Length: 251
Image (cartoon, rainbow, N blue to C red):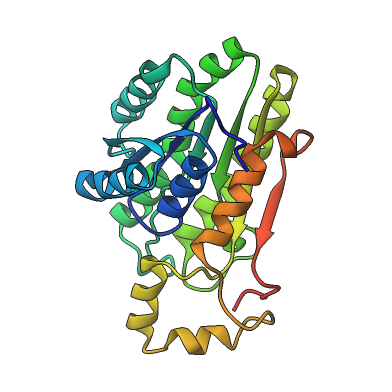
């Protein structure tokens, strides 16, 4: 399928994990993908990989915890082709702990990266999409934003806010033909998950046993869902929070 030919797609947190899989999927379907990450070398590596496979990509380093970096990212992305068709707000961090174990920095940084960045990126993107007659925004929320897991209060709260932000933005801008949806993944095999598994002393096989489907998810499976939601095939989906969990309940 080539659902994104002549379209520009910005993917945040695209230097690895789910973000890199999303970037590769959109590029494989014809998009010019702006691969953005706080890590320039990681973004460049993903963009170069896309180009090696015949796709089109540009790497732009951006610390989206900064408002000015968000605004600069969208302007530079728009300037590439004079359009902004798809924005995937995928970047996120997970500061673990209950309320008494979290630092002020843990809480503040979680909100700046997981939520405030979406505010700034979407506000900068919307005028371009409105002028073009529409567009698609897909946000990465989390199953834990809908059903909180223990000892992750900062992450759970910010992801719940991502879900609310998604539905509010969708209802405000659906009349402008801008579709806003969110994916809510469960356990997905990413570097972030591996780090958590290592700390806990468990293994990936242990996590697989907790999933009714028989295994945890793959980044490419989330990427396929994001691509669908961003495509014209999902033309009537707006304000949806789509879980992708293998039927796993929150631990």
